Length: 601
Image (cartoon, rainbow, N blue to C red; front, side):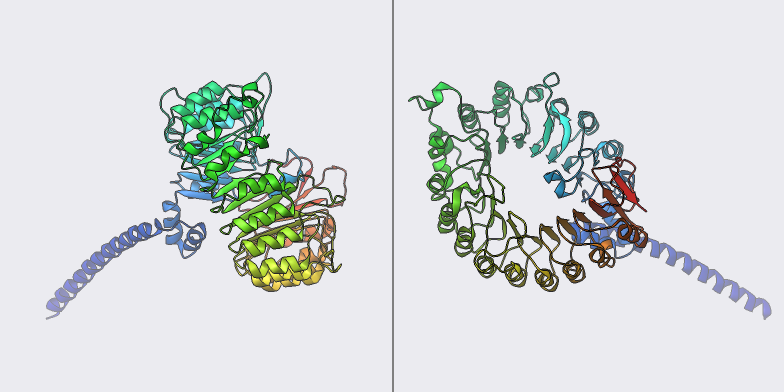
């Protein structure tokens, strides 16, 4: 009897262990199925924010998101090391890296501050031999870096360099000659080093066979190019739709290129002038006909040395234009009106303030579909009386009610005009009003500009980027903190009242990512008020404010995962804080800081 019971127990144990074994394999199989399903689902996520959110769900989602990410955006090259980025994301095909903060564009940073691309170039060459796209902004890279990229990526297709520096024509030649599948080469507002003894004919370095080029942008390259080679390149690039030329390409040469590439959709005209006698003779080569043949042209820019007598040549394409950039063309109101009256489909317009209020009124009367407007100053002096004012500004708000983004430089502005803009254009996402001059009030009422900017944040519910100027009190910043719940980027220059104003912003704007402040009275109390939020921000920039080293040191100790850089042009500045640049980093302080930079611990 006992033997039967023991045998029965052994059978039950055997069945139990067999069942557990089957259950374990089923569980593992189920996990594999779920991971495969999750990876397939994540492949449909294209938004960076959605992917970042998905990676925070749990560890398995974190791993799956990294494995399925092919496109990576890094907003600060010092936020993490190249080693960390390549270790986590192993299947990247496209990478965007940003270096210096935006105020570097205004010469507010030492030229040798950093943002060197060399460490990234080495890491990428080893980790991603299949890399196809690289976008860099405000980075410092050398010809050697470009040569390394060209040698390392056999399938490289796209290179975009925005506001970059340190490289020259030899590096461009390496990319052109070795990246035989190149589709996009764009140099935008970058500084290309030009030494007479080192200039290379980089245009001639492209393959002699038919190319895959779709976009070629080199309007910032300040040296002559081999035009015959350029013309031949355009002729053997049937997919080329975007071409922006530098100022060394004349109007007659532009004419020849347009005949070769009538398929262009985006054109930067180069100088739009000529030193050739034929250009001003009675033998007109038919510039208008060349433009008319480009029936797909929707974006027009350039005009760096414009001959206004030839502006009528662009009339045939104006009806189809959605984007027009005249920010290098010093045209007056009459000349602009002759063009703008044809541009009924225009959505993006960049101009100089030489067009005056009269020109803005013409834009308002014609461009009912306008979404983005930028008005730059010809002369940015506060002692001069500017040619644009609240008159043209309010006309735009009344006539262009679909406006989503505006950058407006002026010497005077009224609260009434800004309030009108907030009511007439409630879909504004970007509002940057730059009143040139320090602490300028409303010229009509002599009141601060508080109510104008308050109306913007109250009435424009989609606002994510805001730049304020003029005479402002704490009340304006209270409005921003109370109503600017979606504001991600705030720029403050030459205004402010007390530390309370900045406290309102830091405590009231939960989505604030980038805060740029220059020449303002904010000090230690304001800095300390953001301790709860700094880990959520990409960076804080404060220059020529009222900060002390002691307060900055306190923040560095309280938030050890933040990097606080004190930048002083004078190495012997002592305790003075000329500039504070604070950002989050997963890998701690960088190792390439120059002497003028002190990193606080």
